[in-house]
Length: 191
Image 1 (cartoon, rainbow, N blue to C red):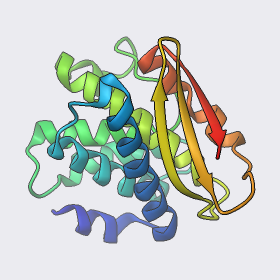
Image 2 (cartoon, rainbow, N blue to C red):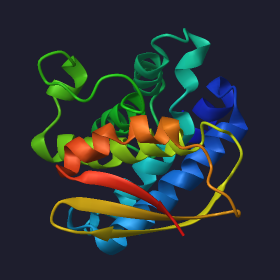
Image 3 (cartoon, rainbow, N blue to C red):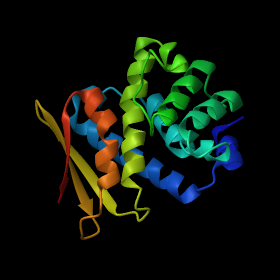
Image 4 (cartoon, one colour):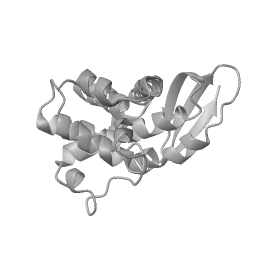
């Protein structure tokens, strides 16, 4: 089954899914320009990010509480046309970590069985989908542009908005995985 078939079959909030995809690509672009850990993200990995962003909430068709886990399971179960089984598992894990606990080899069996490189990809890209989901929590399309700057201890994300400071409480909560992955504090700065 192709990604659009899975999307069409299970996505219940297309507007949110597309906004998360847009923010995810915006965040990735900013980070690739400024943060060493993201400079070598490939086009193929960017595809995983896009698919995971679009499919991150499909688990709602099963259950709200654990929808992130159900999204991962549905992606693996349905498969993704054009991606092999390993790529599908990576993409499913990227979607899975948009909420809930951070990746944990002692508790998360599918994540545990990934290679070290795959785990790194899941951490780098999963943290982006998680943050993108936080940016869209007001569901108001408020961030127009983003740039990043890395220092030894921090990554500053400069946010160009539509003229006022949106409420970023959810993004503040969801930056945890990015901070953990980079081992740096993430700051949001309005410009």
